[in-house]
Amino acid sequence: MPEKSDILSLHLKNFASLSDKDISDSQPFWKARKMNKGDYFNMQSMVCNDLGLIVKGIFRIYFRGPNTKEDKNIFFFSENQFVVSFRSFISRDACWYFIEAMEDSEIFFISYQDLNRLYDSNPNWGKFGRLLAELFFKLAQTRTEEFIFFSHEQRYIRLLEEHPDIIERIPAYHISSYLGITNPSLSRIRKRLESKKSE
Image 1: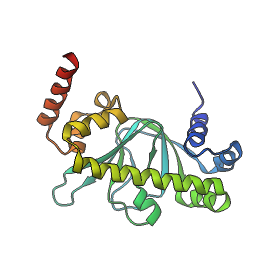
Image 2: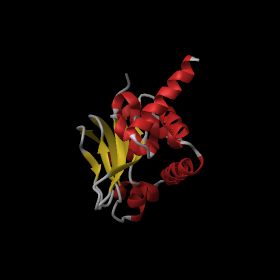
Image 3: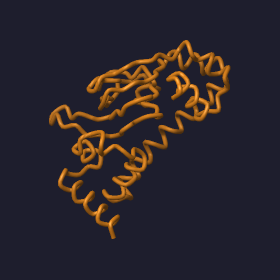
């Protein structure tokens, strides 16, 4: 089992082809953090100041309606994924969402100020920033396109492809919220997919 710091190094190399020196230069800026289930990585109406890399755990990004108090899940992030409210992170405007740990979790995180120091001092970290922006643009556009072009069942299948064990890890009503459907509708989708498997 690799050390957690090795997990960070490996992910950074795979994501942006950073060299050992690039990663070594960044080591003082990355901090480890353990989070309990229910802890917030960022709060609604606050600027998102940190970029996180999930070593262990799963997080949801959700919007809470100010009048209805209803939660709407927007994204899930799990192991080996970056977690951030990217619009707030780069614009320095207040975040529209909560980012909450859904189980006991471990992350590495770096602040906006420290990441920008790396961007300014090292062209390879500048490339990392471009790739990060491309990643979160792709996530946002894909999420929008899924709602326009795909059925609820197709969106559910895509969610399982990205987070294969999510059903075992979080309550079903969170997945229903993410898909924009009711719990009974989710149950019907799951039963239909199970019956297809057994055919």
